[in-house]
Amino acid sequence: ETVSLPGRQAGSSIGKWGPKHLVLFTQKLYNLVNSRVELLSALRLLEKNCENQTEKVLLGDIIKNIKDGVSFSNCLSRYPQYFPQFYVNIVHTGEATGKLKDALIQLLDYLRRFEDLRAKVKQALAYPIFMTLVGLGTIFVMLTFVLPKIAGMFDDFQAQLPMPTLVLLSISNFLKAYWLFIIGFIIILVFVFKIKGAGRESVFSRLKYHIPIAKDIIYKQSIANFSRSLSLLLKSGVNLLSALADAGPLIGNPVYVGQLEQARKDISEGMPFSDSLAKFKIFPGFFVQMIRVGEEGGRLDSVLADIAESYEKEIEADLKIISSLIEPAIILVLGLVIGGMVIAMLLPIFNMNSLLGG
Image 1 (cartoon, one colour):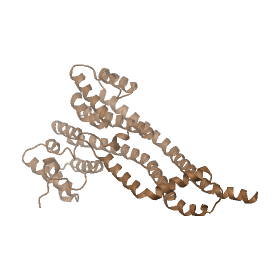
Image 2 (tube, rainbow, N blue to C red):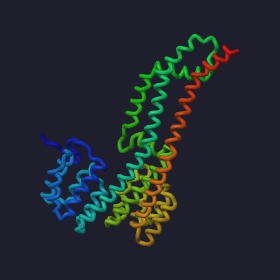
Image 3 (spheres, helix red, strand yellow):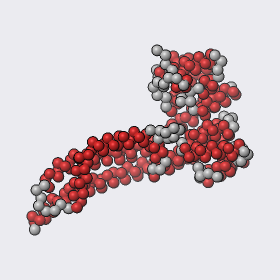
Image 4 (spheres, rainbow, N blue to C red):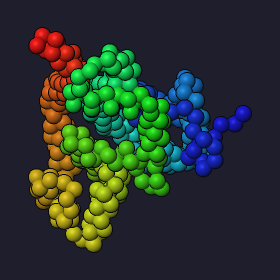
């Protein structure tokens, strides 16, 4: 049976190739090239020893094309699902200058930083979301399955039930009657929201730009990723227009990507990069001023690296604050909600005791 990869237009992808896999591939290839193993031999060794079916087929195709005279970077460019354009350009620069080893170590450093920052952000945001979902699930189970059983003891009460208890019982009765429909509706909603339109992000992906706590961190992460990738491309000898085309999509937000495309047009017409950025609201004023300093001093790549470093440290500081504050905040809110439910159910008993005592 012949397996084809998506880069060939026909066939489908086998397995999964994510950022972590790209890091591992780059690490293994660098280790071999750094050990003075010739590129084709290094790729053959990787193909022989890899267990991932996607990588095995991919490497076999790359090896075949290199033997046919195609350059390594051109081979990689045929598989944009696996190798981003900025990755291909840096490999191309390394080939052209005879410094493929240096290009690979630069890519490896970039990918490690990118993946490390991405993992930290996901970890910091995932835990509060998990706690919230668990808390909401607990409240749902209490209202749907626990409270209806307790509510039976109030049926014989002659006195009027307190308003908080009546409201809680109404919610409980509604959830008990329609809980299957509610769960089904949520599943359908999640499915619909995850559908991506042509060339667009899913609704869930776009929501992250509007969540109060998450949006600031994601914004800083986007600037850090964009700055780091643009710095790496410029340092590798890629011209600014091409570097912006490759680094622009890494900023994530489709609105910002479109504005960066407009900035490229401005630059192609002779406008300085900093002046073009000042027209838009993508970056804060400090960022634009730093870009201007880098342009005037002829060290734009190093200034961008400094900006990325600054934002990465700022993100780490924000994540520490979030992890130290948001967990007790969620516990407090959920405790108040569940405590309020318990008090609402106990109010009739307190009232009955006061009546009997009277």
